[in-house]
Structures are given as C-alpha cells and as structure tokens.
Image (tube, rainbow, N blue to C red; front, side, top):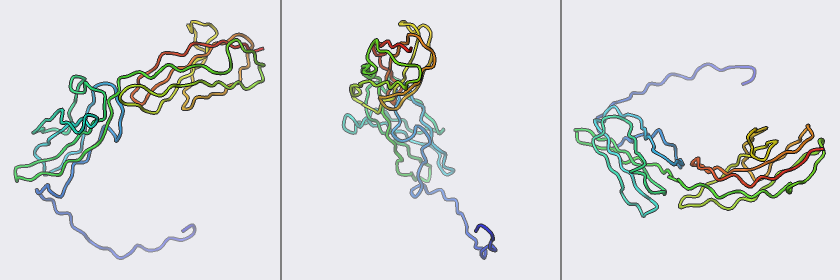
Length: 219
C-alpha cells in the first residue's frame, strides 16, 4: 500500500511443455488490425509457432456471401502481400491463417475482418458563416458544413480537413486543421479577407473534392 510492502508469497513452480501437436494452439494475427480500412495492397503478418512447418492463408469476400477469392498453402514465412488484382472488389473481407506440421496436425483457422474501399466521399457543403459575412477580430467564428453520407459499397466514419487562405485559389494556405465533426471554431486576430473550404476523408484514406469556398472578412 502507500506506506508498507509485504513479504513475497511462498514460491510455486510450474512447467511449460513444448508439443508438436498443433490442434490446441492457434496462430496469433499481427496486422492488419481488426476492422482495418484500406484502398490498396495489404501486407498480412502473423506470429510464428515453434511447432509449425508451414501456414495456409485464405481470403474470403464476405460482402459476396463468404466467397473464397484467394488461397495460398505451404507458406514457410509469416507474411503475405496481396495486390490490387486480388483485392479488386470493394467490400468486407475475412483473412484466415492456420499452421500445419508433418505430425500431421494443424491449428484451427485464426481470422480477422478488413475492408477495401476505393470510393471517394461526397463533397461537403459549406453552411456558416455565410459567404461574404463580416466578423470582428475579437469574435469566435464558428464554421459548420453539411456532409452527405459516405458513398460506395463500404461506408465508414468520416473526418474533415478545413483550410484557410487569404486568396480564393488557395495558393497560400494560412492554416489547416483536422476535425472529427462538422463544426470548427477559430478567432482571427488580423483584419482582412479570408477564404475557407472543407474536404472529407474516410477511414480508408479516400478524400472528397473540396467544398466550394466561402469568403469572410475580419474587421
């Protein structure tokens, strides 16, 4: 506790017995993580098992009804890369790995889910402050925008990036902020004309077109 520490408990011993029987073991999957979103090729990794000689890998398209789309047997390493040709369809996938040896014995399949999404989100729409509005330099300006739901077979939570510039072509970016909701607040200390726009980003990294910019003035 805060003031004192006890003596250790009496010792106990235990033994670890290594066995070549894989039926009661299971492969530990490393990456990608559970419910991972991606829009390109993926490297799959898992931890080795001492008693394993090889591993079998299976890829299931769960969106199409548990369809086996790729299978690799007798893998001697603990990694495999799948390219865009194999992952050609957007959807929910399940990847599975099991270990085997010459005993013969095998582990059950270990499995995880991931998503392939290559569709860009819809374009956000600026709401407030309205275009050509005027605000004081001591005022907190609240920016809000509307966002249609994500598009495509796989839809995910969206995040946003808001940009400010002093010109309408955004050749000079004054500030970029990442936002998890459809609102953002900022106080501007310098008088002048400003322009703001928004883009949406889904969990797979796809980005929308920028919203149509709005102009506001700080006095």
